[in-house]
Amino acid sequence: MKIAPSILSADFAYLARDVEKVEQAGADLLHVDVMDGHFVGNLTFGPLVVQALRPVTNLPLEVHLMVSDPGVWAPEFAEAGADTILVHEEATSHLYGVLQHIRAAGVRAGVVVNPGTSLSSLDEVLPLVDQVLVMTVNPGFGGQKFLTPMVDKVARLYQLRQERDLHFAIEVDGGINDQTVKAAAAAGTDIFVAGSYVFGASNVGDAITALREAVK
Image 1 (tube, helix red, strand yellow):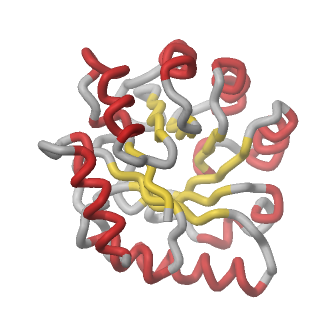
Image 2 (cartoon, rainbow, N blue to C red; image 1 turned 90 degrees about the vertical axis):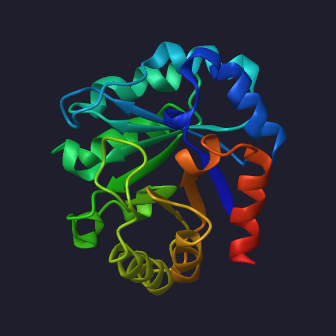
Image 3 (tube, helix red, strand yellow; image 1 turned 180 degrees about the vertical axis):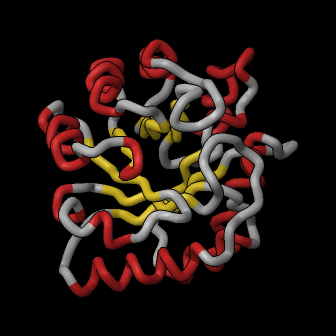
């Protein structure tokens, strides 16, 4: 399993410090939630934040674009130092092309589906992507409750990966804690985004360890 703390729940005034804490605690990568105030109601980070983080951490940076026009923003985040860029299926009518451009920039490409979006909408792009992120909350704000029906969605995605002999990683994002992580892992999840559970803990190392132990 891989744990990706979401910096959306970090202390923005001490972002470099918080990133260092989770890196030392054994996080596998960092999740950067980019929101434009249009595709979702929140407004967060731009490419300059990724550019600023790149020299202060050795962790891979995955950028989750919750924006209305990901094709415009993806190149800027690739240039800023993103290692993976995740694009919502619902955000563009040119999904295949956007993913192609991300890969052409030398960056891992991922696709994201909201809770109400069918996996069938990903049929043509699955061979192209490195990751598929299943939202386990409605996107836009941290600290939401895990949507249990999404466990079945993850299981179906895992089965689809096996049947088609594909190799993308399966990721979940939203409401992950030491209880919900168990069901998500059992369904076939590889990467777990955890925001408030990690950064809201009195000891981030204990929180990350608790997630790993829960899966064991």
